[in-house]
Length: 461
Image 1 (cartoon, helix red, strand yellow):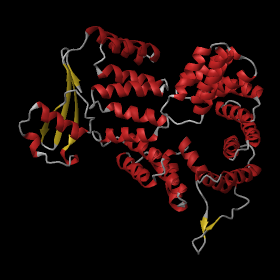
Image 2 (cartoon, one colour):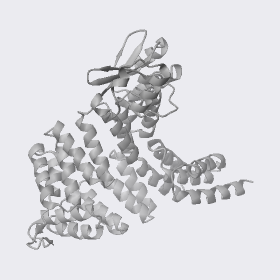
Image 3 (cartoon, one colour):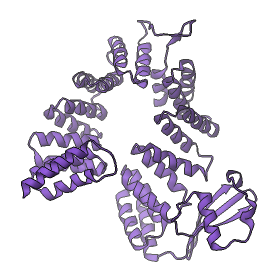
Image 4 (tube, helix red, strand yellow):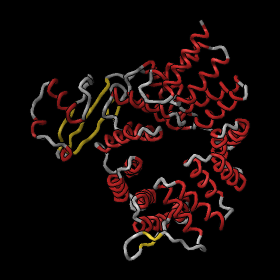
């Protein structure tokens, strides 16, 4: 990408070997209409894209270019100020300046891209998605936006969208190990293990000492029951990462199931080796046999009761099988052993929420926040607990925090509507309910929202 004072040019390159159609015709004289048709076809752009992208063939490459003829000096001044704030870590200030720059000049993709990155750093992923999509709507060859956009979608658990963005990035850049790592993760989550392993292998080709890639393949093999293969990759993680967190995770995860001569799996586990119980518990958790997983974790803890990590894992298994009471007990043990880990208090709050013990939800969520583990889920159940205890104004504050962290949290919207209605704010309550009702996303809360909306309107008449 290059620029000067009067013009901004953004370029992107695709190898001719990546193009399936006849390259020779790209060198022929073309009118603007035909050139636009070719560009849209080669780049997979929407038919209604109205921008102008030029291209030229140089040896084995097709170089695409997009340009804006004039840079607004006022907007650019704000942009430069925003960059200064960003370098100092003053992200909120930088966002304010980039927002203002985009209002003055809504046709410069740089401003939207930097805005998207800033929102990503603040973990405001929906806002990041909006800004980065705007970047690409202006300049579809701004390929760096695909990388951050794909990661934002991954954080939002919109895996198909994430996959598409990473694949679009790879159209231009083939040697970024991080993209293959992320794609491997997405494919694994989507249970496309073959492509997941292929992506992790590509990451290893580029970065042979990348432990996360080996760990990704190990997890896939473990999920598929390929124990020996999984162990080999776990060992590689340990070899590369030494005493790091990934190595410790790999040590815990190494499966120890042995094969009998009949090639059936022998699940008899030595009673004097707790790590075997943990490995079996983890393997069953990956295979969604949460009851069996809990049994194995309990056996591990009978031998090593001071392991807070495994108490937490046991609690997760109990939550999965619907036993919130036992889950709460397990998370209590984890929190007692390691009282500075906010995650344990968040999970404890979630267990109490499922038990409808709202007083304890409030205490646990408050502790989780104090320890830095306050996300949309924490604020949501905290707000609901406050509502149930009659603290309506405080509930509204917490539920508002929940939606600021994730504006697509339907449960927080529904609870906020309940609280606003209780606070005699029918108009805003109905507004949140309609956001749920008219959303394109499916949700069991839509029917409940219709019922509550009707009740609020009837009461208000």
